[in-house]
Image (tube, one colour):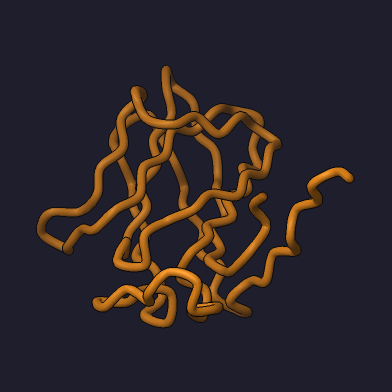
Length: 124
């Protein structure tokens, strides 16, 4: 029997855009409902959009992304050594419940737009 991915349950109306450019890392802060200062114990059920990130790159250029815990004075910062999201692609990734920011940058003189949605599921 093949492993099928579980459906992605988005945190409705909480999608955030990031305009990634080559001039410096830009970041977005997750909605408060997508972050927890006290992580939910393992196997305790859904935690309201805190465990999965869906990243959609709507442009044709590659963006490099990084997520973690940041502040307005010391935000999460991406470099071109971070994980690439190829233009036109969508990816689903696990995140820590305490992660509150995601950052993106492009290489060369490229620009692209990413749409970030937190939720549950979508990963084998």
